[in-house]
Structure formats: C-alpha cells, structure tokens
Length: 168
Image 1: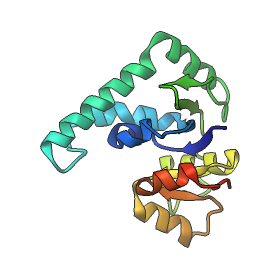
Image 2 (image 1 turned 90 degrees about the vertical axis):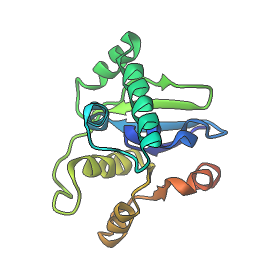
Image 3 (image 1 turned 180 degrees about the vertical axis):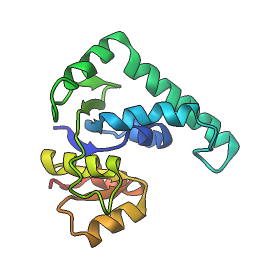
C-alpha cells in the first residue's frame, strides 16, 4: 500500500531522496506549487546557498517542469484543473513514486498565518487526511502553534514517515 504525502513540487527537486523512498509513495502536489517552479527556474535569486548546489537544483527543476509538460502528463493535469479539488490521474515517476496534482483552492481560511501555497498544502492535507512533508521547520512550528489538525514531517524524518504507521 502506498503512503501519501502532501508536498510542494520544488521539494522533489531539492531533496533527491524523496524520489527513492524504498517503498511506494504518492505525492499530492497543489497545482500552484507547480506554477512556482517556473518562477524559481527563471529567477536570478539562488535557491541553494552553494553555487554548485543551486545549479544542480535548477537543473532538477527544469527536468521536473519538462516532466509536467510532457503531452500525456499535461493532459492528465489539465483534467484536474476543470474542477476545484479534483486530483489528476496518477503520474508515475518510477517504480515507487507516483505524483498526483490537485487543483487546490486557497479559501483564505488560514490567510493571516500562512501564505497561499501553505494554505493550499494545509487544506489538501486535511481533505486527503494525509501528512505534510516540508523542509521548513518554522512552517511546522506555525502549524503546531495554530493547532492545525494535520500531521507534518520534516524532510529529514522522511524515512521514519514512510516506514512508520503515521496515518492521520
């Protein structure tokens, strides 16, 4: 049985271990975080501290954009964009990783404490009853302080999240 995590698209480019989980994983990605990939790829601001790492991550972002733009994948994503909260059909990456794009809608429920993409991540996690996966510890802290009813894991705890019985 596949474990499901809610995640931003850029996390897949920054954290390579997410593509090699060792057991089946499905990542639900809000569509707006895919749009953010284009800004990050074209932007002049570094994503990573080290220049070499930054170049590699931007290359991975480019590959991820190309994956989403492949004709077959693009058609699957466009199906999801027809109706709010619809999920795309599965987009397999490899034997253990499947992506699904969700047309999440920011309803401003958490707008004062969280930015629009964070709000979409939260709402998707609640709707899907799945855990969030992030590398932003302050985001996890704000989730806890706001008593948001979602489970969240730091990327550093990815193996634990995949192996454990962590269903929400």
